[in-house]
Length: 320
Length: 320
Image 1 (tube, rainbow over the protein chains, first blue to last red):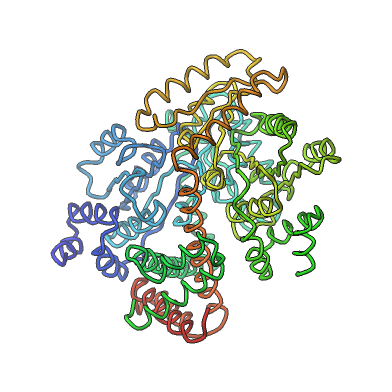
Image 2 (tube, rainbow over the protein chains, first blue to last red):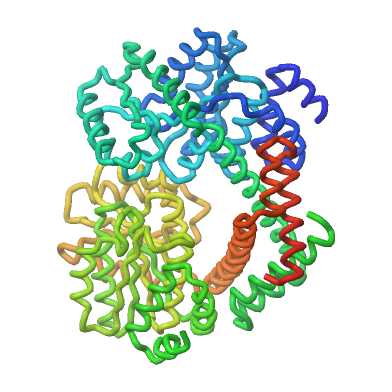
């Protein structure tokens, strides 16, 4: 493990890849790894790209990354595809992308599917973001399908969140329903070379008009096209503008600190659950209490309090 | 509170309505209520109806309930609409439904929206199911939109889960993607008077052909129409057949008991989180530890273990 950490610190890309693989599996050793990485984190700026499948997120990310690279910035990319049954998400598309950047040490791409993330996709994604941050990338891009709460949670890792929409019936309405509007710092209307782009842009602007309480930062609506290259520089400028907005208004650090607190508490909660589950593996007080509930000798609440007291008493002695 | 419980036990419908309102708000008194109700639960059979918005779930539920009523059975209905911004879900449709059953004491309908369920919609729904069960209904029907994980979780309360599909492009595919296929015990192809019903029924049968491991109970695919009344008796027969299947194969009670265990542990976890959150309200050890993480004086994992030990030590003394 120490060898891996040393190679990671020396900038060995294979050590980074190996680190991410370890993080994807809930190995006890990961804690040691994450503890080490933690002190190197906090420098990278995190951009999230979300949108429906087929919205062209990957192509858009590639163009944005290209521009950042042209400015000498390094970028780590995490493509999360929870809808894919394969580990590694869109495997084929990914290989093509990886080849394109294969000779560029300033870009690192990693795909994550549903499998291989026992601790929850959001937690794993956050850990991988930290790994890329600790490795020294200037920017980290997280790209995911915005379909459910789990995918929205992934976006909570981002400093700036882009919602990618495309001209198409019901797109905007679906987005409102899914609660994606609320997380958008920037809208990108992709495939703006297709008919209907103006219509959806207008729809989004109208929805923003109704959200008076968010007017401190009104999300810009950027029409872009990966096909013609239209609007990409403006989109990158929107990202930088949002970053300046957060910094200038003293929102950047407090938000990150709040997330760090929440993450720490989440780790504590997770450890607690693991302790309880471990007690379930053997006959004993906790299993006895659950049997009593099933046999209606006690109610679930009374049993829950007794479980808490028992696990706490047991664990404060033996330490967690 | 005791007065309410007494009226509930005497079969006062207004006491039931009041009880459900209390359960929707995370009142400390609810525990007392749930403890009392617990010993009266376990008799009702729970059916879940899920499907996309507009699939005609409510109409289908109404027809199924009508048949159960004709057989002298009593039914409690919970209509969960997490996509509705209003408490009470589809308010208008609901009033119409309620009027229809207003004079029938054997039917009770309750709508639940996103608001008014602080402890999570799934937990609240489970509690309301228990209230209807404890009140003495023979059947409890839970009806919800199958869009995300949270809504799928609601379905874990059901003994038999019906997935409602309609003739329409991409319907079946969307259902597979959303993971709804896995939870279906019965498929109902609603609006089967419209073109395309045979096609979607065939698609579902083909998907079932591929799931060899589930062949112990192969979900029947019922074509129904609320407009013509086609297939409703057959659908009710499918439900009863699944119920018999569970009982005859000794699956019914073990599954319920497993859920009860899981619920009890979930209550314990929830109480634990509440204890930690309470510690956050005041200056003290937990806040100090989080500050140390933010200032990079310690890492999140080390802090998490110390939080666990601190809360446990504190709580085993004072009891939970």
